Amino acid sequence: MGTQFTRWMMKQPRQHFLAVRYKTTSSEYVASRARDATFEKLMDKYKNLLKVIAVQDLILANPHDPAVSLDFLSKLSQKLHLNRGAVAFLRKYPHIFHIYHVPMKSQTFCRLTDRAAQISKDEAEAINASLPLVVDRLVRLLSMSTSKMLPLRAIFKVGRELGLPDDFEDSVIYKNPHLFQFCDAHEPNTHDLKLVNVTSDKFTAAVENWRVEEYCKEGCSVDRAEIQFSFKHGYPPGMKLRKNFRAKVKEWQRLPYVGPYDEMAEKKRSSKAGMMAVEKRAVSIVHEFLNLTVEKMVEVEKISHFRKCFGLDLNIRDLFLDHPGMFYLSTKGKRHTVFLREAYERGCLIHPNPVYKARRKLVDLVVLGRHGLFNDDSKPRNHARNMEAESLEQHNEETCSSD
Image 1 (tube, one colour):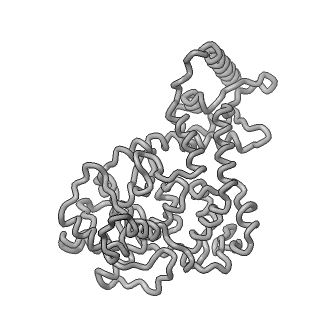
Image 2 (cartoon, one colour):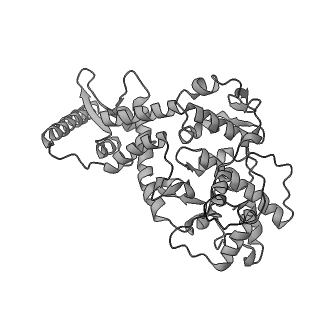
Image 3 (spheres, one colour):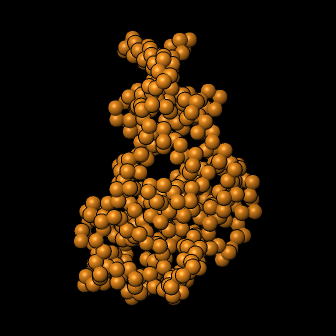
């Protein structure tokens, strides 16, 4: 498995490689990638965060009574990947979840703590305040599609990544009929989102802005022809870059390509240059896609749903692996997640946005775990802990009696 470009290179002598692929299977290719400790540590936080968000969404599903019973949550433990059970998971994050018992219902429930609830509220407010940006992201995403249409289910899958509000159909789509329109898809009970009367030639890709900044830097000695088709690169610490590898990257950087918002008239793959140009366009599209996300990261499985719409008949995961200077692929949490390397420094976004800042607060609570439960006000905290223990004891008694 691999990108079309990689498959072609595998048949050539080694000096033609851009990213030398010593392994032949996809799983071995993933395993052989150079690790980056900073991104791996970040994914350690995110793999637990995703479970927290799943439970949080269940709690907030009912705005009138934002809580969920432990019985219901326990039934979903396997689906939510709560390996040690719902109760053990909730007790792992006391700064986020509060367990309490309701005698009248003879049930034990879980809700968000005041701190976690405020973070959720801050995120929602940040998203609503950035609706013009959300509209722009959707328009750009649709503009990259060859048909100017995208499956609604694919957009839903990256709703969090794009910072879409929960009611985005009403607050974004129906409020902008001059931009968006729903269409029936070819499959039954499915819909596409179509871009209406907007030309893509007015858009500038994020990499173009970087090139201008680089070229305009004081004392910049880089020739314009050298940076005209280049992308920013940075490699994992300790990754050995052979002289031959550097030369091939330099050759690839100079290669002209069709941008993500430009129409590609014809895909010529008969020559090495033609195949490399097709592959470089694919890189430019996924690079722009990641730039459109709130946290400059996305699960590979999610972005793969856009592959056909963007005209990419390549293996997306291998495309990321072929360019370790631009993307970092992590396999933590039983999922493949790709980061835009240039957007991060020391595990944080270089240019954070309000939505990212709100979400980062929740990450901090996840990392905090059970720490900070005991300090100068240990009496109230001990009392809260005892109340939680009593609620769980009552829950266990009810569970045993029902059995």
